[in-house]
Length: 383
Length: 215
Image: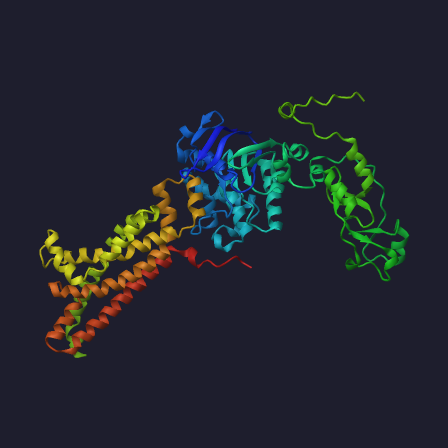
């Protein structure tokens, strides 16, 4: 657990970067600091490993005051990842990853075997070990950056916009892998970003900061979307809040409609026989959906190029947002639901998803927010 | 070129002396320039003073410096140590800026991540900043090496013998052969220094030749 206790930072030129920030980043969770540029998020992050010294207040790691710890010792116990990875250009990938273990005096062989293990863990081939950073793409360098931060298995990781400098597709991959990694490792992570979408996707807890490290709101992503505390937070969180909040609600077992289908190569007659309301779904050999087709409009056996591919596919039991989107994006209006292997289970209509959404209660304000807003709790109505 | 054949051993010993007088100051100068350059790169206020101050040393005429040093130092006038000191001063003059700029060019992100990983100041300098500044420092060192080889020849005038002695010798006897041999030997020596520095640099910077991302 990392605890900010009324922490302030005023720079010599008089600007207040952070003003009495009090915040707790719970053990094993991802806490995201998000806010516009100049909100003090990076300054706050860097005060944790004392790259910046607070002017006032204390930062605790578990029950230790960081100000009283040895600087280098403190830092070696905290993984640190920054925007452009900050790899050492003159060291091979394996040597880069082994940096902190070497500083801790593990010995070369142990440090290198640990580095190779991590290289694999972040999804890079062992053949990259002897390359130099310049020989890797931005996304690959960022993976090495994460591996390097993890090398000595620190309980805490600080990440400063680690995925901002890579293109959107790579960023999404890195985010997904990061979440998977965190699922295994359960580090205490403080993550800085200016991208609210990233915050919502990655954070267990999100701290929205406004100018000079002023904590505007601290909540989990669903709460943040459902109950922004003021206009600033509402604006910052952005549009489509209701829709985005569906990411945090699991789909129930929808009563799925059976969907008949045809394989690639089916004749127009076969397709027409299987079609419902003018559309039929085309599957591959493993029953994975490829796309929709209108049998009336084809004159030759079904080929891949003929398919309407606009429809998204939702996994059963996944977020409601995906199920709704599958229905909304489907050319036949029938949303495709698949199992964990991606094989077709059936289809669901948008109104069925909406009916489920209307059934559900919106996330309730927590006690502190209720009190601040001057509201009384919603009374439970017996069924 | 019978003259060279007859005096080959002498020329070789003069060349050895020349290499010693030009080479040792190169090493000493670098050792002095490193902390000064580091200081200049760290401190914005000191930077102009250190760069200007050391740079100005280079404008002192060599003959004046050679003559002046024995008065300031506990060496006799004919002592080659005077030349070593003078050449070291010139090397420092050329290298402080190079070292400061080389260290200044180390990317901020690299320095920061080094600090964040728990490098202490000296270790960070030795194992991160200095290796990354090597290409720039090496370029400065090559200039200094050539400059040293050329300036050392003036030391003949204060009686310290090296390849420059061939010039005064030829000049006093109006005899061209030793002068030509001296010039060629100086050029070869400068070339030798250059190649040596280049080779060492390549050896310690394998990362410089690593290509861009594999396609």
